[in-house]
Structure formats: structure tokens, C-alpha cells
Image 1 (cartoon, rainbow, N blue to C red):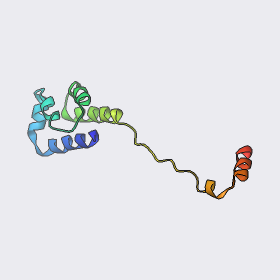
Image 2: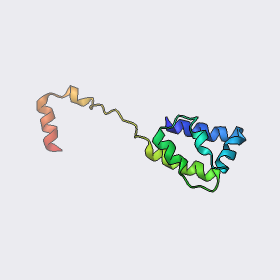
Image 3: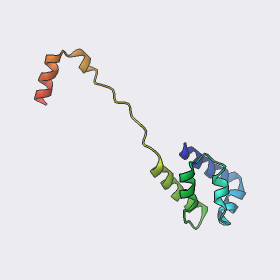
Image 4: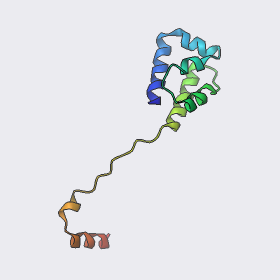
Length: 96
């Protein structure tokens, strides 16, 4: 969800000049509060030291990416496991 909020921030910065102005004046926290960032991530983003909004966006991307939990992958059993009887499975395990 945080990556989506970051995408919204960057997209809004293109059409709303006040976002870049808020960044330049040191008030990016006001803008971050409007988006769906966790309080901890909002503090981290607010403390980033960047010389331009483009640099801030790059650092924010790295911060959000590092903070996101990896997507959980579903691990399905092999379809062969249901076709083999227990004796065949034991033979395959011993060979491998």
C-alpha cells in the first residue's frame, strides 16, 4: 500500500506545483500526512535529506521498497505427489 501512496505523491507532484513547493520549504510532512503511509514510514520519509524533489522521490522509493514486506508466495505441492503411492515416493526420495 505504501508504494501506491508513493506513486500518488509523485503523480500529484506533476500536476500540483504546491507539492514541490512544500518540499522546497521543508513542509513535505504536511503532504505525506495526506497519503496512506504508516506513521513510522512517514517519519522516515520526512527525515530524508535530498537536494531536489527528484532526489527525494528516488530516496523515498528505496525507503518504501525496503520497508515493504515481500509478497507471500503460494507453494503448491507437486502434482506427482498425489499420483505416486507411498512406496514410489520413498524410492524417489532415496534416489535424490
